[in-house]
Length: 310
Image 1 (spheres, one colour):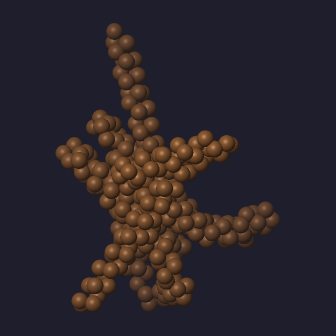
Image 2 (image 1 turned 120 degrees about the horizontal axis):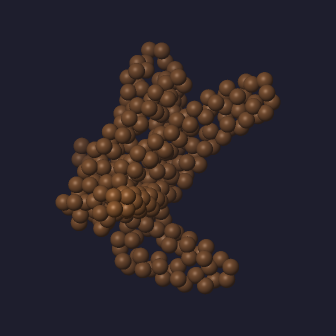
Image 3 (image 1 turned 135 degrees about the vertical axis):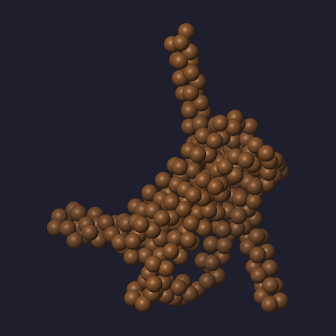
């Protein structure tokens, strides 16, 4: 009997772990947009410091990220227990914020001149190179800025993950949120560390006596800046899709419209399945762009009104 009880217990634990793994995958998919932006933003935050300080800075930000999640996970669990009705509004706010961030990036790209961006980068490089500048203070400011950015994005990740766990047992909610927090933090900052050191690895290999190693080094040096651009573009697009999707799914009319459009193209020969998958995603992205543009316009108007009053 004891042996059978033990096997039953192990089977139950395995079943719970399997459920947690499945739900963690669902939550991870839902937070993909934030993750892409998180990766791009934090890689940009820690670039520009001295090469020998890049990894310590990444590690310092990663520790700050763990602290952020140690605050956010219990807060999210408390909401799920005492204020479960608040999950959907928080999801809507998180989705709207994602749309706003994406639209703000696009507005910055198209409304700011390349000369302004070049001047900002030149000033930053000059500050790092200036021996009179307190590099310790500059580094601390970078870390604080990155940790603040991480707190906002981590809150979005946790809230979106919590939204996938409505009606799930409390113990499984704990397991999934903790798993998401740990995996996302290690994954993001592990990749950030690899990205910020990619150019150093390329420079080292480019000086090798081996022709293949030199070629690889030159390839890494050329690839690193392109990777940052790709991450930024993919992260922005994913923000619109995830943020717009959260809002669209919470508005029945929009959700049904997307589903009816998907059903209408599902029978198209050869490409029906692909179109049925793409149409709802495109609708989500369009909702995200529209919501983000409206919020950016409102925020800009409020800022201008405050400026006039001041």
